[in-house]
Length: 221
Image (cartoon, rainbow, N blue to C red; front, side, top):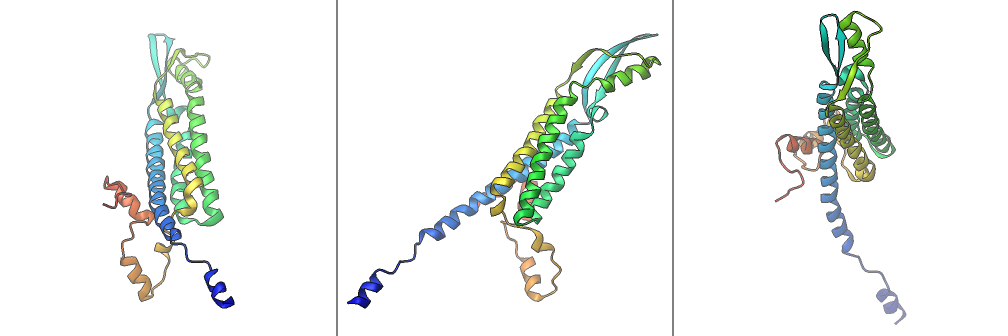
C-alpha cells in the first residue's frame, strides 16, 4: 500500500507546456517580421527624406530677392548616418545571440531616437540657409529671412521613430527570435549541406524574402 500511495503521488506530465511553446512561435514570427518591416522602412524613408528640402528662405541681393533652399543633408548628416547604423544593427541583431543581441538591439533603439531628435532640431537650424544667402549675395554677413520649414524634417523624425520601434521590439522579443548565423557557418559535412537545402520559414533571411515578395510571413494558411 505504501508503494501504491507513492506511485499515485507522482506528478503527471503537463501537456500545456507543449501548447505554450507552439503558441509562442507565431508571436516570435510576428514580432520579428514587424521589426524587420519597421526598421527597414524607417531607415529607407530617413535616407530618402534627408535628401529633400527641409527649410526655405529669401535674401535680398543686387538683382532682387533670391529664394533659398536647404536640403536635410545640408543641414545635418546625423539622421542619415544613424539610419545606416540602424540598418546595420537590424541585421546584426539577427546574427547575435544572448547579451550581444540585447546590446545590438539597444544600439538600434538609440539610433532611431538619435535620428528623430536630430531631424527635429535640424528643422530649426538656419546655418545652412545663411551660408546659401552668403553665396547668393557675395556678402558673408548676409542672412536668410522669412524662414519656413517643409514637412520633410518631420517625415524624417517619424521614420526614425519606426527604427526606434524596431529596436524596442528587439529588446522585448529578441530573445525568442531565431538566429541566422548558422546559415553562414563553414561546415562541409553532408549534414550541414542537407540542412542548408531545407527552407525554414522561421529563419530571418526567409522572413526578409517574404517581405520583399509582399507576403505576410506570419500567415501559415
